[in-house]
Length: 175
Image (cartoon, rainbow, N blue to C red; front, side, top):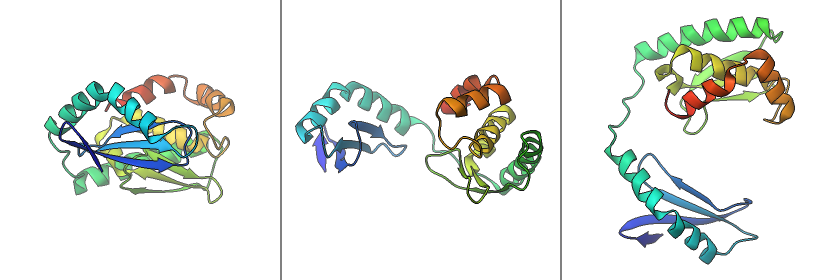
């Protein structure tokens, strides 16, 4: 654990390609440095070059009110919405028999296990508008045909939901 200007920074070495810098919702700063191709000193230089962004991001995150937990009413409403959207899009896309569930997830809006034909949706979708939830449903169901985010996935998304990039931006920026 390192401290810069009184702010703790967790530095870890990982099997990654690039130096990564992340500020968590709780204000914690994480710096990941690849095992190969970069030194800790290079990671710290990168961190110092982005320090203004770190301070501003921490201030914004720490000053925003904590998100209230998803209520049981919101959970029920999300279940109904996902049941409708998942069921309709499964038929439209020719993917019958895909099961789904909801759970709290920290970093993903959804995940698709294409081998088991099961999609898991993030409980936080309960806070998002319908069109963004629909984007996540189509996105995850598209992974049944294209398992990564490469050109074939993007072409399928273009055909299935032409405004998906706009919706994705809305989701990434909190709706």
